[in-house]
Length: 189
Image (cartoon, rainbow, N blue to C red; front, side, top):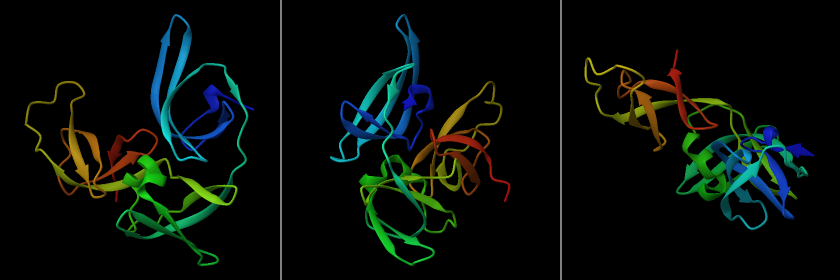
């Protein structure tokens, strides 16, 4: 059994007799009825996604998933091809299968990615908590306009948009948290 507080991105659980996998944490909201955790989940069998609100303290059955560690070999259109480093077996997944995780992956990275299987079928990936990306476009910061925590949108090399502090510029490498897509720090490499 897994409780609402233990659920995170990549977790799989049974909800109303459907196996669901968490693709994104949308936040928490507390009110008169207690804490509600909002999630974007994908039905493992049908592939449909939906937003779901779960009350704190609810318990769910865990779904048995198998995992295999692979590396992203290349991207062809909307197809991501992964390779097992031991058997050299290749596995194809679509951008839709990867969900929001597709925006953090690049074949140039040398990171291990954990592919999740349900009944022999690939259903998702687990990425490292932090990935490093390069900013390809952002507006220049205005000098003196730095009171408080001010952010601006920046596009990174994989095409996703991330809010970064005003001091970040094009060409800089930044660290992004894959759980919520937030800026962590400038890369130290």
